[in-house]
Image 1 (tube, rainbow, N blue to C red):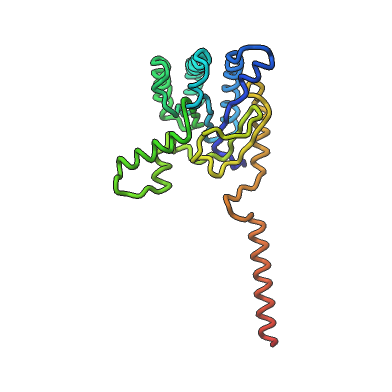
Image 2: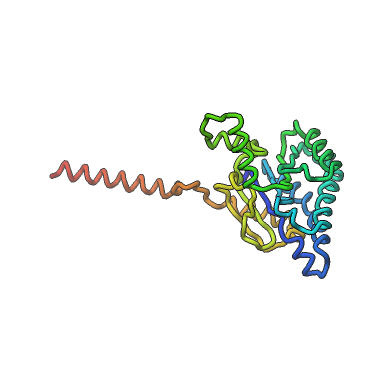
Length: 253
């Protein structure tokens, strides 16, 4: 059984995918948006507990206005198309980030979808939109300081004040498109995450490749800073043998 419970994905490469085909960047985003449903379904089928998708970063606001506008429209289109399916599949949906800058009708639709899926007990699906990892941490710290002006913050205090603490730490972060950066994404949650960078650009990313990555990474030994179980066992055996030898030598001397 896979130990991968929380997967985070940076959906990168839409613009370069389109450029390679002599199309505008926007076309890449449109094609890439069609991949999302397949990956969400695959995650659910594989028993993944939480899936967090990086859809729009705080830095993306500097992109051309028409590109930003189409990203907003694609988010709205996804919610309109998939809302009933999310409810049917028992998916708990949430958007994290500073969404106040989004169009009012999109914000309303986000909140409606979150409310309709609030009691769902299946896959925790999160869209990171207008999101930045540093901003999330600073938000949590400032919130704690206001609430507890004379208390020192613990790791648990900070974790509890993140946008979606119930998803826990990230087990695996996948970035498509060939770049090998985490780009200010879930910085706190990815402290011990396995990282996987694929050259496949997001519009070409498939459920088959996604499952292959999960299967591959599930075979990795995650030690969280410790030695491996096998190494630890071998060290114990060697120590026991050494103590036994020293004891015998002490008796005979």
